[in-house]
Each structure stands twice: as structure tokens, then as C-alpha cells.
Amino acid sequence: MKNSRYELLVVLYVFGIMVAELMSAKTVPFVQLHWLHLNVSVAIFVMPLLFTITDVVNEVYGRARARRLVRMGLVVVVLQLCAALLFTSLPPSARFQGSEAAYDTIFGTSIRFAVASLAAFAISELLDVAVFARLRKVMGSKGLWLRNNASNMVSQFFDSAVFVTLAFYATQESFGGNVSFLIGIIVPYWLVRCALSVGETPLVYLGVRWLRNTAAAHTQQVHQVQQETA
View 1 (cartoon, helix red, strand yellow):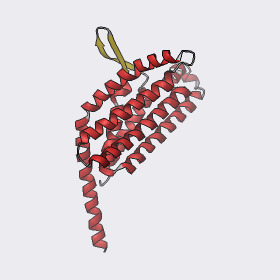
View 2: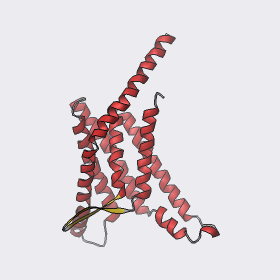
View 3: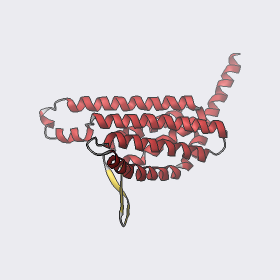
View 4: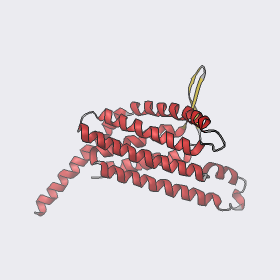
């Protein structure tokens, strides 16, 4: 039981990664106001959760463990992409030939989108950990809401910018045309993610308190064992 809460956070983190990787191709209408029609990927509902979890781990256990969690997530992304590329390349049995095209459409990932997703995840998550740790060094334990949202907003901007740029930059178009098109996608998407991050701020406080109680209990148990064996 001593690490069960942290292990649950790891499970939720891996769950969020897999949902974002496997189901992000679907977009849904998010804002429909007169001339403004903003559609977002369903991954937007889990991505802020990933940054929230790394901030909670960073706050309780420190930067080193948060970085290990991110590296674990990177391994999951790489393995999932390799598995998708392998499985979609294998020939189907006779019974599943009719559904092979749908299977490949759902789980097949182009190299370009795979690289974009991996690069965006790596840069944004590691940046989130670094910014949060830096702010904590400066501010101490004060202003958790500010440290959480500042690190999330910075890192999620880079996540959106890196992925959209790598995935949708068109070499046949002019530089100015690309910039205009990409900004039109990146900025609204980033603002929505920032709003969701602010809305999840109470979860950071709850998560830190919930995880810190377990960490304190574990430390007390270790001290007791050391005293008994001394």
C-alpha cells in the first residue's frame, strides 16, 4: 500500500498517453459562436491531465522522479507507434480481410505524424517539469496554482506549436502562407487547453495532498524500520 497511490497516478498517466495517441484523430465541435467555429481533437480532454500529473509528482517527489515519469511515457509512445506500424503491415486472415482497411485507417500512423507526436510530447513534458521545478526553486512551496498554470501554459504552447508545425507545414506553400495557417490552428487550440488547465487547478491541490499523505506515511514507516533494526 505504501506506493499504491503513486502507482495509480502512473496508471492514469499511461492511460492518458494511450488515449491521446490512439483516439486523437477524432475532432469535435468545441466553440460555435456566429463566425467562430472551433473544432478540437478529443485528446484535448486528456492532455491537461498529463501535465497535471507530472506537476503533482514534481511537487511531492521532486524533479528527478517527474522526469522519470516522462521518460516512461516516452517509452510507451515509442512502443505503441512501433506496434501500430508492425501490426498494420501484417496481412489479415481471410475472416478479417473486409475490415482490414478500417483497421489500418484507425491504427495506422504515418511517419510524419508519429514523429510530430513524439517530438511534441517529449519537448512539452520535459519543459513542463523544468519550468515547474524552476518556479518552485524561486517561490518555494508558495503559489502552487501559479507554478502549475505557468508551467502548463508554456509547455502546452510548445506541444501545440511543435505538433501542428511538424504535422501540417506544407513545403509547397510560401513561408508566409504557412505561418498564417499554422497560427490559426495553434493559438485557438492553445487557448482552449489553457482554459482547461485553469479549470483543473483544484485537481492539483487535491492530488498533491492525496499523494503527500502517502509519501509522509511511507517515510514514517522507513524510520520505524531503521529504528527497529538499529
